[in-house]
Length: 379
Image 1 (spheres, one colour):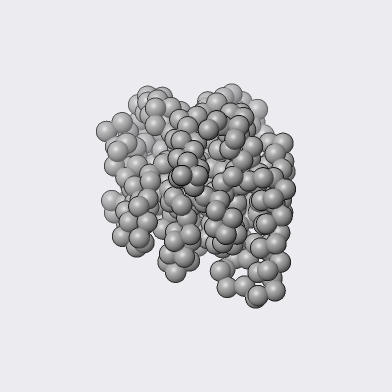
Image 2: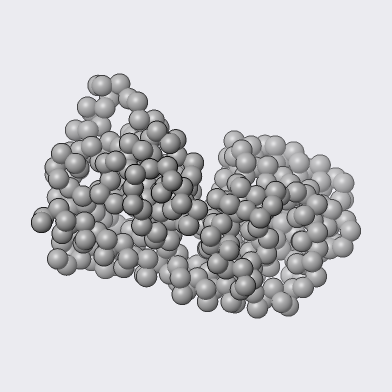
């Protein structure tokens, strides 16, 4: 079978701004380049315009946010999915979130179409995950902790395939203009934090801002912080920022809200604080990463730490210690004082990403899996 015979339906709960969606976008772009027919389905979200740039068919499907749907609504969605599969002569369905996966897989199973599910984290409701994995012809996990979790909690024999990074898109670039726009002096040390500003991540961000205040007042008057992201707790972030600016008598925290062109923002940083996909993208842009995530604190990632960082998914799925304002302030102080060494760490980071996470390599692994599953279906 050739790539041309692959007609893939990529399914998302919604086409919103987030790590999973960015991952699907990079995959779709790479697969289209390889001559594969890609179709996207999901609730309309803020990333829909970006997806339209790909030029592939996009269907807005009003997927529910839970598996329990009234009979009537369920039948309506099922017939919508059936129509897409028929119209686009889909040969395989690849889903990334449980409610939309459960619905589309139910239809695919009846039609003997193979199904692939990617588990992006350990946050899926367990009952939903079990039901979806049961319907999947193959289950992919994006990190070692997720792989262990799926092995322990389900009957699946998962496959580990990392998130792919588009290393042409995510690379270093000139930021003179962006710095000027944000009013950041040339000689500033810039720290960038990026995530959705919701529960745990908002707490991490606030802890980071308090730690930055301590560092700014004690040893790094030239520190500037850029926070990219939006979410239910953005207002709390604004209030804290105002308070810190009054205390420091300096406006050095830049809350830029949600951005869909992160590849323009990472290069502005001397160091990126983040986790998961943010860490991978930042490293591709030659940026050193201070890893801190939902699970806790990992620290600055240099070349001796790559394997551990990857096995912990940079603090999102496992960590070394709890995160505290004190730990952050202490490590940031050290990091800011060693900016020459930071540049080397950044350059080596990109090398690692090119070797292990380049989207071309990851896409090839996926295509191989697709072809395998299609062969299984026909034998």
